[in-house]
Image (tube, rainbow, N blue to C red; front, top):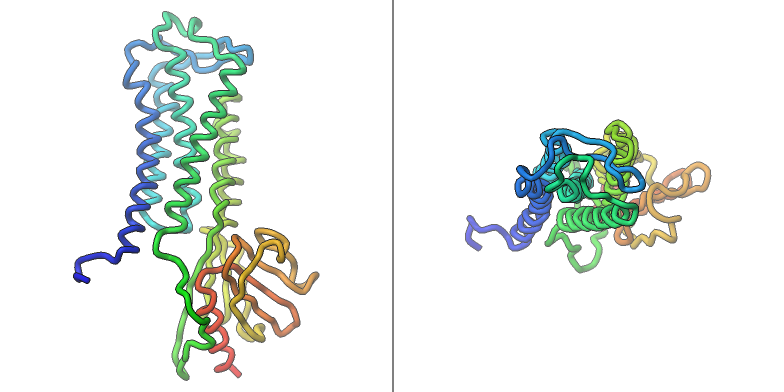
Length: 329
């Protein structure tokens, strides 16, 4: 291979990130388009809120409406694109949230502009009945959820990361005095659901109450929950550390002197009580951090309890732990 060429897997990963980043640009352009097309045909001010019966009962200036319904999606969409371009798995849920929320607001942008276009006064804007409102909300949910899911799948599981086939190594051959650190991670395919769900609920609250502060709760909770869909594992001479997404806390630590043995296993969520942090070492004698089905590490601890965590390339992690244990004894 030419030294200046990139491996096929790396090139595919860049292509997937570029495609995911393009979704954020699409959300930004989609929100701007109706204002650009019909700016001179909108009333001043323009209707911005409707009653449950579909009658316009609130208005904003054209500029104010554009800043809220087009400016906000532009910021969110471009932020999603920037986050995707960084290529860091820990911020993928946040990127998916920004892209999905941007596309949801783009739907509201089109709806508001089309309801106002050619109206002599904002009071004469088109009536948006309950059926129309529900239909628009459903369309926004579908578009936003699809964009967020696509962003997650394109970036959280990049091409070229499949596990190599072959026998699991029982040892890494760690030499006396040699230091080694292993870092791995695993992500669940459901991680885009909490941030997008929280973002859409927040958007609905903004539309219904007119208060952006009402949206902060569900958005923050959704983003925090999404961190549970990504786990990072570090193995070194001190033992093993498990972190969730981009959160600095909590960190699960198991000291090396607490580990009796380690092995790589196939983890099935149903056998460990589902997804997330399951069980309790103290109360039940076993605990697990599960974000997806597949490879993981199981630790038999010196107090008789068991600890497991899903992570890619679990064989090497277990082999390094066993080498460190053998050297410590």
